[in-house]
Length: 245
Image (cartoon, rainbow, N blue to C red; front, side, top):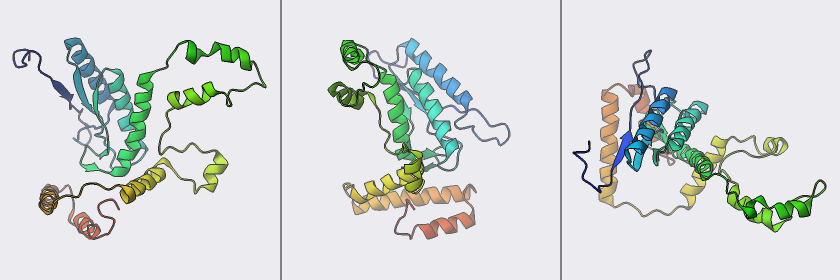
């Protein structure tokens, strides 16, 4: 490797290894053994002095946005981050990256935000310890919510997920008992309604559609999409909400 890399060159090595599911013969996306390998890979890169190690943790075995999808991506992402990885592929992927969905990407944004906050750690100094303030407030019934120090530091210290359910039980029951997936779908709809991206040119639209059609035919030929599923899929393409509904 050393003979192939020029001195001073920027190098990024990517981990993309998945153990085999011995029952199905499919790669075991999201398996904990994959996380062990990611940790070994990232730590070895650190020892070699390679500053940019990349890990793919968004490839999960789950076929839908569910609890399995959550733990199969969150646990490897945490392990990769703690092992020194500085580039983590996480957002939006479902079932070995065969599918991507914006709702999953929005949920992943909360996952990455929590990991990033953990990596920042706690800032310990005279101001954050606030011993003078503790002496001033004293024991109960003293409280800190009306103090300028609290208002300043909770904004810096507290990560606020965008789509997690943090309501009290009565509030949750009165608010249609929404889950994180419900909130993520709601946020997706808000983004789609308000975001104004630069439109693609007609040529770019044609190229995108051509690539998608090639992919559809490829997966149908490989029998990864049945004829019945393809009929439903092509019907959904005529929906006003395509490709998100």
